[in-house]
Length: 572
Ligand code: ADP
Ligand code: MG
Image (cartoon, rainbow, N blue to C red; front, side, top):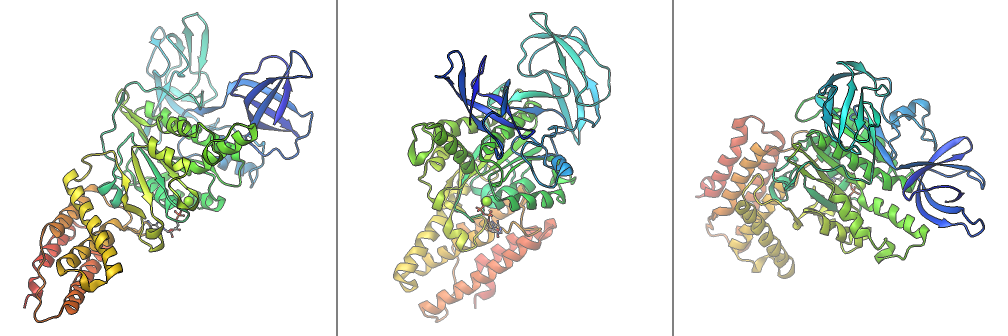
């Protein structure tokens, strides 16, 4: 959209467009001189909301501020659209999202128990803690906005109940200018909140998903791209991580996915429990729901808003996981915008700088050893036709430490989660199991996979018995360990103690030769018997996954494997 202006306009500042009495948010993308009016200009804007009803002559007001997010207590448990309009609040005004309806991002009436930490005369700077309020079970640190340099505290209120509109302190900057502070402040979404002391991610997250925690682990502060074709299980994976990954805070940016899916999430999650505290799951979450029915430009904003909220809590010392589904929809928003602007397109019409934009996004994740917090970023990618060669998947691969490729074949075969055990990367050396153990599992899967191909090309007959046994071992690891039912109460989540037992069982199975007694059987009969015994083992193991809970029951797996390896009960 274009608008004429006189006076000053800054690149990237936001504007409000008044259409039929509503105000719509927009952002300035380009500023050009107005050929018809010397001294005046024309701005090109992207409007974040539906422009229906706009006519030539509608008023535009420039705010002088870049797109920003409101940070402060009350962020958790909230559900917003991509511009931080609270969806629940809006629903109270009207059942549907109507463009231009605004509600405050954070509850203005709610009272918070404020405890000051600094006193008048103290020196503070941007990011310093001036007090705290309890937010659920977390201690929300009230920070000096990051835009401030060195300041001194002029006054601060005593401990007590305050809402977010009230002044809690005054600080004076080096030019002797006094500023009023509240529990909340705005921060521009495209300026990353700094690290105190950035360090390398090194602590593995227990996600509860076996294939991840065993083979492709992710650490606090790490980054992962999770590409997969439509229906391969990206969204289910994100929801599983939401429910089970161990973290203080989970932020979900549901970006451009189907509206029905978003509604399901809201309903579903409200009834779930946090795996560490047993409290309502939403207490550790906030959701930016930006479904495909909302304007495309808001998608671009939503990821940046979610990142900024994540950085804000990292700065307070919390472990935050940001889940974005899907970053391809986000990239498409950039594509649409640059198309409209008439930029020279890069590969597949994405903007030329899409790799840098994607890199810039993932770089905002990381560990801050200065605060003890971390921000982990796990983004799905939905390449058309599942083609990983396209620009967004490629740029994601270059930008993230970990990569979980979902395979169409595995999804078609209902082998969930469909992470291809032969198409992933992880930046962690020793996670919950040693590198050596991980490699032995991988080698077995690899070999089983090539034997499988041999079987389908030249037939089972030509495959030696030892190879067939190896193939069955690989099949067992895949079926009993890597595959996991995200919807089964017991199977959905596996913690490290149990992974250790699983690893012990797998290493025993891999490391021991198993002799099946021939007993006068021909090759075909022998292989049939081997398959039968492995099938039995797999069934038993699957039941174990879905039931064993006490320490003793869990150890039974090891006994079972030992018995299986020795094949004693069959040896006659
Ligand atoms: P995508 O987001 O990649 O398009 P979804 O996450 O919506 O795909 O998954 C499609 C379907 O696959 C789900 O509705 C579910 O039936 C099945 N599915 C995916 N992952 C799992 C899983 N771990 N366990 C069980 N079913 C799964
Ligand atoms: Mg999906």
